[in-house]
Figure 1: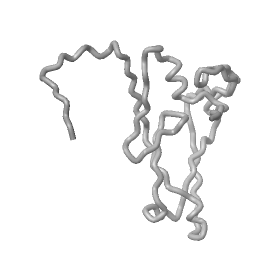
Figure 2 (figure 1 turned 90 degrees about the vertical axis):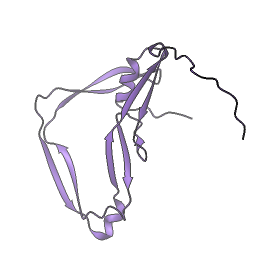
Figure 3 (figure 1 turned 180 degrees about the vertical axis):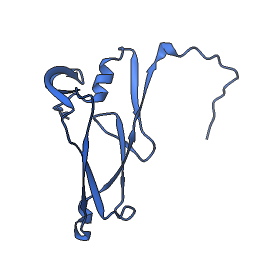
Figure 4 (figure 1 turned 30 degrees about the horizontal axis):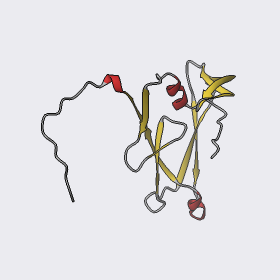
Length: 141
């Protein structure tokens, strides 16, 4: 199986590069949500029957807020040369475009609900020994 090589450094890869070898990380999302492979967010689709919006909006940056540089970084243990965006603006401005969705076109759109993922890091030495406080016996079914 081959992996997709991104044209940018995903946030989860930046997080992993700061971890120690003995640490394990998991990205957690609420049930019915899926973690994005680029990390940092969870999403869930909303069925067309449940989401019957007749308008849609797109949020766009009205001004350039970042500088993009070519950089070499590690992606799943491999060195990759790609683009890395750095926020350089001190203020941001946005513009929103609102469009009417024609009933005949409504099946071409999906509703998404997004939320922030929670990253948990485990390091065995962070957990102390827990003494057993009772007898355990095998169970049978």
